[in-house]
Length: 128
Image (tube, rainbow, N blue to C red; front, side, top):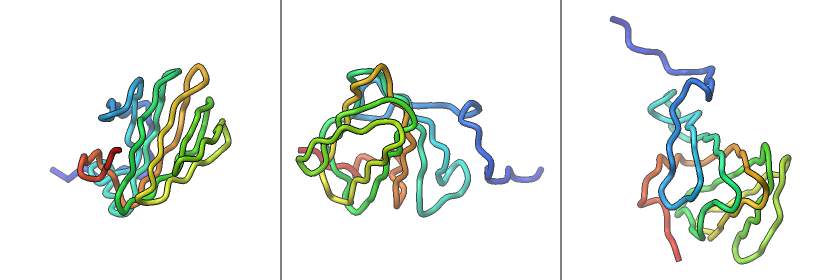
């Protein structure tokens, strides 16, 4: 039997989703990651978040994160400064900088990129 080849073309509709720890009303689908397609240096996730939900203030030690808004709007706080983000915007969260996100529209859909990969590891998050 031949081993399964890594996935180079990924369809979110064919993948399972999960609710990440310390988030509310959130459903994530991992599109790029070590287990799925062998990625070693980045991770890409499709996130869907309900109105009023999101993630409380936290930071990722030694890890950068970008969040591209596909749909919806949110209040984003980065390093104590509040921003209004909407579809077409990209939020960058530098390593070690505290940030939070709260959806202000009916729902939010975002593409999330971590480098290096987060892989839902609790040791890669610090909270206030």
